[in-house]
Image (cartoon, rainbow, N blue to C red):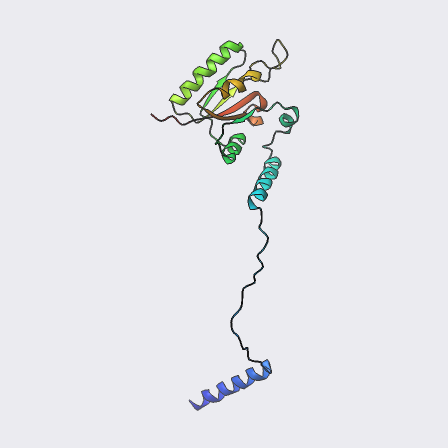
Length: 182
């Protein structure tokens, strides 16, 4: 027992010699700083990063943006996040309508019937191929120039946008439809 006490005393003496003189602290509380850090616009930074990432990954169709050929529309209340997901082609396309070679009147009627059927069968996202009008008689897109207006008049349409390049690019659109209940 006596041996332990001697070693403890030696350790205490060694500690005091290695630390040196110590000044006791009179107060043991730390007062917080009153300076608040500047707020960070985290959402803006996240949005900017998402745009850069989207452009780097090739989801952004620069050709369509430069020519103004891209079709875009969303009803009020559709979240930007949902619309971005639609633009990236991240919704599963559950039905498709190809309007190549149709007259304007026939295309409008087929589109109307197609959308009614899609809503009835609870389709959420569909693709409509309207073409770019490169081989039309007028030399300009006839259906494409009208389809946006037709879709905006439909209550079941929440949003639409030009498809990704692999799904038809500016010759096709993704259409997001309301959920049908009942």
